[in-house]
Length: 180
Image (cartoon, rainbow, N blue to C red; front, side):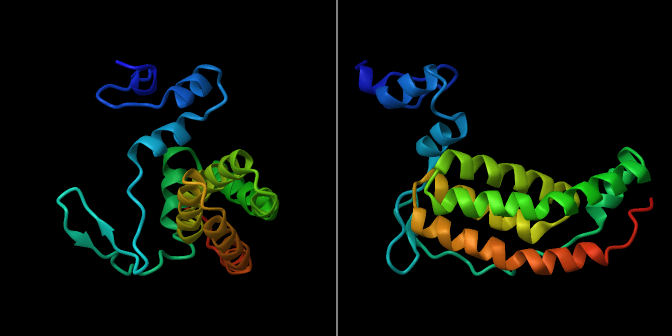
């Protein structure tokens, strides 16, 4: 086996480029980025279609956007922890939301992929827990664009995140208490 196709630790049956292995061993290549490089899909055609493993051409299905806010997530958190903990989480999420979005906008704007990826992952996780499903979805799209180094797409998604912020803030301000 050549150095260019040596398997990464813990990854079996997959060839990982030697440069990625060196960066991974040195702690300079986030595992998420490495895994995305291994498993990412081939490039999309101009019409948005992709060729699948079966050789057939597949068009992406148009999906309805997820809801801005799903209160059931905070209700579940209240049931697992307490109403006070769920309220505190929602309040902290709401208070930190503009800073988290700003971090994404700034890091994408200067092309700092690792910082933007970290910010998107953080916001996606917190948004999912808070029930901010549309923000979580947008963060997932941003992560995908960043992993494949599509900075133009990342900039577009970052803009969508920024545009979505006021709508989410309004929904959070009028949310009911997460009583269980």
